[in-house]
Image (cartoon, rainbow, N blue to C red; front, top):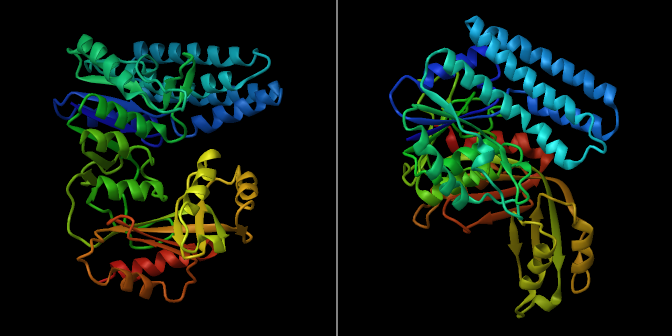
Length: 441
């Protein structure tokens, strides 16, 4: 069984949704199809929520009217029969009736906001399933809210998902296509919640791991994961094979095609992940699995919004426990560290979340001195096969970066990642220089 996930741009137009139907029925492979909301819907729903929190009912209702008009037009082009159009219209009317009911809830809380945002996926999956029914495709709609749940730490309960799907899927053995929602779930209180932005990828991976799928396919509007950011660098190309570790590094450090959490469940259960292009289905895309090629340099990604902290203490000299004390403070304030560099008396770290930076700095100041943090930094992550036997890896990287100031370096923590910290104003120059230095023939 396969799990195929289609993102917002892949379902964002009626003709694209129709093309998905063709894709998923080209062979007899049984599939769970995970859909995101139509492109733009989640942002509009969030904007409606903001208006309701501000008690601006007029603005909220105007946005609801505009969004409903978009969906009304969408179903007019999606379905081919009067029966199909009527079924689609009933879905739209029902869901927008619920959306309007939320405008009458005062005060409008986070609970209602999460219910509102979930409507994007509830709409797209119902509309698509109704289209499959119209086309005579043996299919069923399996609500994600019945098998996807997070715990008190907002982590998915994969054991719960395994057990629920083991109960539910056999009831639909006669259906070739099982449609479900990405992104949405329930929390420990049974309320509608979500896996955060980009969580539809995560949903697909969680489902794929839970059912031990033969393969997970993530369909987007680009041909696999590229070796560099095509928005900034010319002449990028798709990377055909990556290991789970390589893909996880790239996703975490800024490769936009893949949600950072996606790889974890797939790697846990050894399920290959294939990144495919909805606009060019014949393209091979990128395969993420245990195996990979021997190519030294695979890809580059960049993560913005980084802050560097510089921590000094003479008591670190020949001492133990100093690093432990530092990282206990970051743990206390739930602030992950991305990069780390040390000397005998100094520690430099980077973080991408500065919400608790004052509290962290205040506690660190009780036993060490701090420099002024460097804001507006970017981590450049270079991924590849950097085993100890490969010569010249660092030389090639530093030759490419010879004209660009580097603030921190992380190399040797894994055999797949070399990271550099630069000021964000050098990001584009660094990505282009590395592309030229590492990938040009």
